[in-house]
Image 1 (cartoon, rainbow, N blue to C red):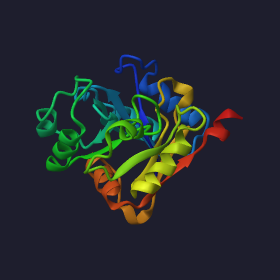
Image 2 (cartoon, helix red, strand yellow):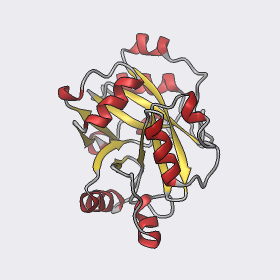
Image 3 (spheres, one colour):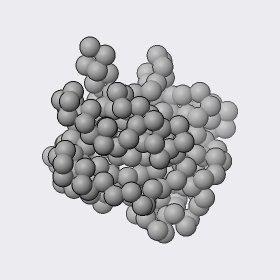
Image 4 (cartoon, helix red, strand yellow):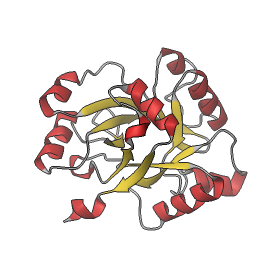
Length: 216
C-alpha cells in the first residue's frame, strides 16, 4: 500500500485544497497512491468525516496532525483524546521530548517532518542544540522541499540511524502524491489509523518520490 502521509486541506490556515478535490485529482491523474493522511497544522480535526469520500473514490483517508516544537515540526499519527489533552496542539514551541513521550505513552507515532529544512527542520536545531533522545523516524522525502533539503534529510537520518518515510506536504491539490510511503505487505493491513500506527512501528516501508511523474 502506498500512502501520502503528509497533506493539508482548507482546515489548515495555509491550506487551499478541499479533500474531495484531492480525491478527484488522484483519480483523474491516476496517481499511484492508495490514500492520504490529513495532517492539519497545530490541531487535530476530530469533526470532519470523510467516509463518504472513501467509498466514492476508493481511497483511504486518515487524519493526523502536524504540531510545532522547539525542534521543528512533527507529524503525529494516532491522535486520541488522551494525546489531545497531553499538550497544547496550538502552541508553536512545544518541547519535543514531551511530544515524543506523550505520543509513545498514548499509543501514537510521532516523527519530525522536513527535517532538512531551515528553521522548522529537526536537523537545523540539532546543529545548534544537539540531538534529542526518542527520535526514531523522520520524513526524508518531502514534496515541498527545495533542492538540497531532502538530500540533507537522507544523509543525517542515516547518520543517526533513523528510519525514513515520505509525504507530499501538499497545500494545493496538484501537489498531492509528489512524495509518499510504500508499505510492505509485512507491515500488516492498513484499514484505519490504528493499522497505520502499527505499520509505522513495524518499520516495513520506504519513502518514494513521484515528483518527476507529476511534473510531466
